[in-house]
Image (cartoon, rainbow, N blue to C red; front, side, top):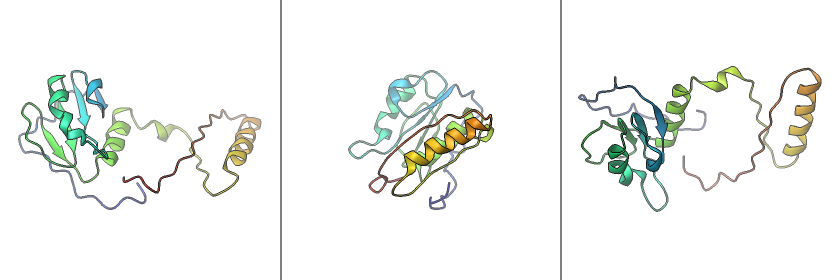
Length: 144
């Protein structure tokens, strides 16, 4: 991903049984099902790693986080950027769906919504299907 610092390779324990079937990738420990990989995201108030024991009890086959915490029952993989790891894991698990579509990003201070409507009309008049997701967010305070 552009804009992200180069991350060192993940710290994968030598005894990690990574050949276990994965049934999903989740970041909410309450959503873990048997076979899920739990990605513990650091929050502003609570680190998701605190919920790893709950995730493992629910059937998580591995935990991915930015810091190691002693937890028995599943391999613990330490990465530099858990959110980036979540993006890569989800893309891999779901078969890289964005590779099957054309993605257009519109940036700038003014005119993004209008430009997206114009682009949608152009695509549709050319016979191409078009789905539009409009998202306005301020990323200045987010730490990726």
